[in-house]
Image (cartoon, rainbow, N blue to C red; front, side):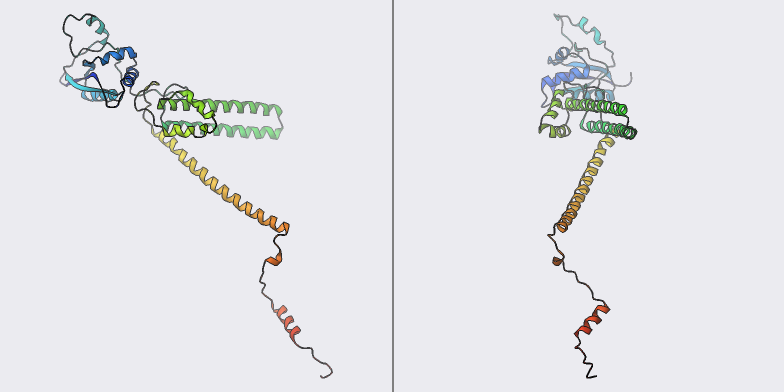
Length: 317
């Protein structure tokens, strides 16, 4: 091959601040291998994790490995192809001759490096980030609102027709709808907890008084693990649809605030009008206390002038 080939070499070094146990778990999740096999990579001697790569592919593999917390490096090599399944045959228990420093590890390293986990919307396995948590919650809310609207129309029709059997069936369907909404909400919250690195059983804190009022806000504030944890690899990057759906919550919050302000002002105005009306009815406010200036008309002015003139003696006339 005319193109230079490269390999990924690892000698057990870790990135600053990374725990060796966390790095082993991340590597096991990345290579979909057993932790026992991964531990052989930390023997202190250089091992080639991947061979015969182009420079671009080597950079991709190196970035995926650094996300697990290990310090690997790229080295050039001739283009060769190794079969990792034959490693056990060429590495006896008692090594009689010097071993190559670039011998492949005993771990069964997969050829395809899975940098991100597969999304599982209908389950408690996997991880989702904060924006995807908001987006999935928005989709769940929109679907629920649409189904509730259909049920409300059907319920009004049943009430107008006075169908007892229909009302019973509608109540049963509404119960199962609420149950399905609750289960879907729990699955989404559990995956968000997994992304933080917490157990899904912590969702039960929502049922604790006072704690359950701010626990959902904690799920939105806590960032997820950037690398793989015990619940799997990190979720894939957020798509445009996820960003748009999560941004819709800003619109919903703005509408709620505007509606609350409008409702508050309307309540204050109604309370003021009711107070004035009750004051008039109870007599606490009389007409004597209200000064009303009336403009006198021409007739009333003439009558007042006649009354002011002295009486005329008809005998003298």
